Image (cartoon, rainbow, N blue to C red; front, side, top):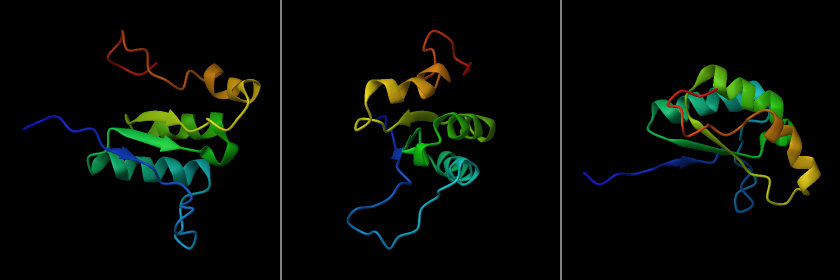
Amino acid sequence: MRPLIIIATPNISWLHPEVDYPHSAEAIAEEARLCRENGATILHTHAEGKWKETVTAVRAKSDILVQCGMSSLPIPERMDVLQTESRYDLRHPEPP
C-alpha cells in the first residue's frame, strides 16, 4: 500500500458556515483525539486564537502532529505558539 497522510482540519468552513466545529482548547483536543483514532496524522488548527492552551490540550490527548494555521497572523503574534514548542523535534521519535 502506498503511504497516505491524512490532515484533519476541524475549523470554520467558509463554504459551509452552518457546520459546527470545536471552539475551546478542550473540544479541539477531543476532536484531535478522534481524528487520530480514525487515521489522521496531522491536525491543522486555528486554535481560536488560544494557541498555548490548544497545543497543550491536544498533546495531552493524542500523539497527532499539530500544524498551527497562522499564515494570516503577523510574526510577533506567532511567538506564543513557537515558544510552546508546537512542532515536534524530528530528531526524536517522541514529542517533547
